[in-house]
Figure 1 (cartoon, rainbow, N blue to C red):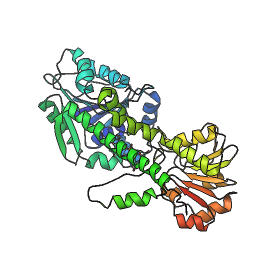
Figure 2 (cartoon, rainbow, N blue to C red):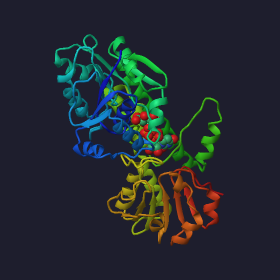
Figure 3 (cartoon, protein in one colour):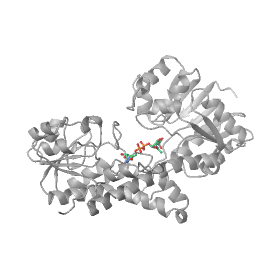
Figure 4 (cartoon, protein in one colour):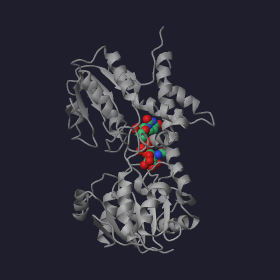
Length: 427
Ligand code: SAJ
């Protein structure tokens, strides 16, 4: 099949780079977003998301004349739905954006059109939620129009490269629908394109992120065990990973972001009776900020009025994204327990935490502090000079939740350095 026009609904982390990539390959693309601020920003040649290389790509797409942005879809050969599927208070997926996007496409649907859902969704969403809405057009999915699910699998911070190079799974409600999807993504994807059915493709996405969440949960539990038994978990993991069939991930202050901390719940919601392990892994990772805050409180023998400096607020290194960030949660807990906290996030210098002071520079964050806590392993924070920290700070307590600081150097500078997952052995 050949596609000349495409409408991408949702211009976020996935929709915007996807729309731009198609446009720079010559397709006529309409990017649609319900948020008028996003449409306005893009029309003004600006980009609302920080991601390496994205600004250049979007500007090239707009300059080429192939990428337009607007608030409503128009008749096109193909439609990609890339809207958020947030999690509600009760840990169930909020599909209202997927529903609204499907409803917006329905009046424009024609015989032979292709619709692809990319948003991470519970199993059977494509067949059970999207298809019935689109079929209100009077056309039948898989017979009159093509319908497929294709999960995005790109890593924030490396989106542009991974969008092109990663293998892409396309699951159709029929084989012909999957093939239509392959013809569309083949325009810019260089990785392998693998065809399957829609529900398998939905499961693949959820399984990938759940596997990672469970692996991190076991690493966090190993860290707690190591603390109790006087072991250094970082050394133990490194040694265990020498085994040819073992690959343990890294412990830390918890799991954040809008994917791994959310997606496993979609499986728990779909089948609570079958998912005790997945649920427990989520609870272990969600409990990690609490564990870190309590470890700091214990090591400092109390938090009330203590002047602490927390470094890093984003959900992981080298991104400005604060969604579901465990670092933020640790800060909230420390502030709530009475610490006089200063925070510093180099990728989002104006980000605030209730009850804490926002520092614009590292020096401002550290000046006069009794204790420094590393929450995110940004390159610039990993490489902090302990001697400089010692000059600015009033106290000599340091806590590394990422296992990255050079222990000998911090000790040489006079610090009492505590590292998550390392227990003290008596004697
Ligand atoms: N983390 C650890 N220990 C580790 C690895 C990560 O504590 O060893 C923490 C991070 O600090 C962060 C969280 O886990 O808080 C998630 O970070 P991440 O880098 O593992 O993943 P995301 O959420 O940025 O991106 C994931 C990726 N999925 C997988 O690697 C299976 C990406 O490929 C997906 O496209 C993305 O989710 C998504 O959109 O679903």
